[in-house]
Image (cartoon, rainbow, N blue to C red):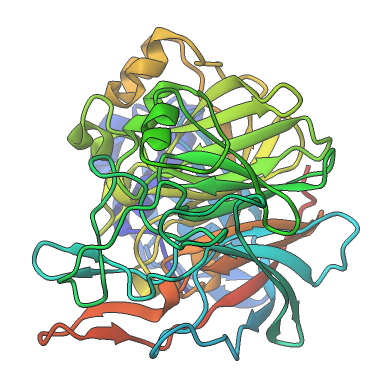
Length: 495
């Protein structure tokens, strides 16, 4: 079983003890000095409970670390920092794991993979999903970490899959392409590439050897999230590059790309053939490289689209952004294609965990339950036993402050949590639904999230096409890392 870092566990145990002391009218600061650990045995249901921390006796009363006891009894324990609350729920369980056992070959040793989003459509069978792969296999070459594209001809794509019987079957592959009569300047066809868009804001693309620079593709996409609009039977995709939101037909035809203000002219000058709409706030052009839009979802009634930035942005600079906990979620009205809301989502505090950097606490996907409630996939960069933040939160927007067009939106990342409170900014309310790290999830990238029914969630990992860097001789390394879809069964009904 994976656990939170000791500092986080200590904090939870301490908070529980302090809350009890306060309820009894005890001076916690003074009495804490007189605490003594004891070797008491604790039994539940006739079986002894094993705790990671011993109980303590303070002023004649016994206190047990709440997190240790709760987890030992099969509870999921959450510390709500913003509201100063502790929640205990029955721990969910893994209902099934399905593996893509026979992915197709791309080039050389590279196989298909890179699942970066997940979608289940109402009315589809429970085992049927849509997912998408990102910009294709890519790596970092040499000490300068040059961005390489070992399969430069890769076309970003959507998959329709069936996850059943322990396996994943691809039912349909939908490659993205421009409308009829338009040609991508890099591919020479209607199909687009996964290459960066323009020199300057984007990484410089190189071939697999890291020696030959590749051309930029102003229509290239790095896809990370997928949503469905029931009003016109189209998909909406989240792209990291600009960042942008991309509307496509079911057959993969790109209808339009929605970009931050100021980006349309830049892309058109570079030769983009996609229809461009500069309707997103200009501040989103300040995304940190490779940290653009990551999650996208549409409310079940089809009225609103939500898009999440993966990391805090470079506002006013990269260093400030990487230290910030302020993540942004946009709300767009689909009928008018206008942004109507921007909200603050406060990421977990990396200081409360061991081996976690704040810049690596990110949002990876969204799934809308209503026009005011989303599920949010929040994760760290660690895998296996080191993983501590792999969580699905319920995010309630009903009391959250709409920051769109305010002065706060222009400097959100530069504000501390204390300053955010002082300004009266209310973030979306978070409630833990599933702590996936506690369930033994082995992967770094918890990338796709979908709701199957009121008690079942589906998640999928991004295996990065198995790319594992370069060896000392400059040869690309490919490892066996499967693509897997997990079904998580919740004890409490989603609402």
